Length: 474
Ligand code: SAH
Ligand code: SF4
Ligand code: F3S
Image (cartoon, rainbow, N blue to C red; front, side, top):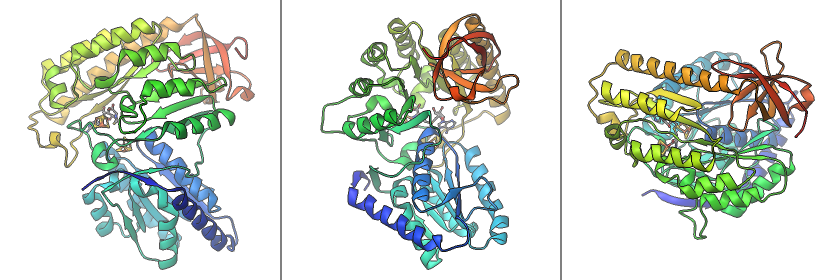
């Protein structure tokens, strides 16, 4: 039986950190600093997990490389959401035969959502001897212990216990950016959309305690982070499993109360649970970005029902209207699946119609990919991949048209953006993001990275805006 929630104690994490120090002592005797490579697939949740793996590796004394021929330890953090992502992982893991031939002591670890599926871990065991270590998302907290076992025994380790709804606080984290931070507020998912593998590999929904989340957000703000994204598969059900009466809107308010100049974002918000209370909170909290990622998946009620999404197109359109009443400048983005089993031409047209009505600022579109063990994988599907591709292309074309029109509407306007990196698009040298997450290329001093600036938008295309810095901080 699945364990719903298992809190890892501080002592258990301290033990793991003790193992990091032991590993550090063992490897510091070698002639050069040891190198590690962490390769990440999938969503922000996986990015956040990889930052924890890197945090542990850093405590062990590893430095990081992107070159698999140099790495002493390679960790591949995988995603199972679509077949394409899985095929890439098999290809990349298979190719490590060559690096290991040159570097026989290299340790290869494969972790993340994909390996939590029994058939995947069995395949890695049988057909990929290059892999030394396999661990699922529920075992990440004891990565040091698992790595040490491989180092000491030279035997392969497979740790994919299916029954642990783990919550672990205090794992060191090496964040990718100095400006933007991922902050997981909950793990797992209870929704069982019929196409989706996530609930099977990530376990049931479990929320972190609000005080732990607020303390982490406070630390991030103190360290200078300007953009904090609260992560969960359905942030709207935050707190339902906690004893304390707290919901997602309460959590936003508590984080909004932290002093400092920063933006609060979140994802993902499931439309079945998005309420006016949430929209009102977003409108009232001055640090909350006016952006909502509200994945609709389909515009057809028949398909939504078959997907087990628990809302109708009418309810969804009503929510969008209501959210825009609270925040007229709201940026709305979405995910859409094309070619769900049995989706007809008319049903696809309903999705296109919904897209034209909502006019999304950005859309993430996917062709349905059957996932072993999910109910949709057993549904009859008379349509071919080619037919689905035609729909997919039409959808992308519509999305691009809308995006170009929305972008055009920004020209001549002044906006506040957060400068977040270097642009490779000459003559522009900096990238930035609007509150809604839109990409703006700029020319300016690299020292502006990490600050909010006011920009004047001069031109645009389908994918980005281009602007000039007006006054540097506002
Ligand atoms: N929890 C989020 C989604 C996580 S997965 C939510 O409910 O919105 C991210 C996106 O991948 C989903 O929104 C969906 O559009 C897509 N997706 C999930 N399973 C898929 C599948 N089997 N085939 C194609 N796309 C899929
Ligand atoms: Fe998957 Fe649905 Fe859960 Fe999102 S809400 S992770 S799509 S099961
Ligand atoms: Fe994320 Fe992929 Fe897992 S989308 S939760 S990494 S299956």
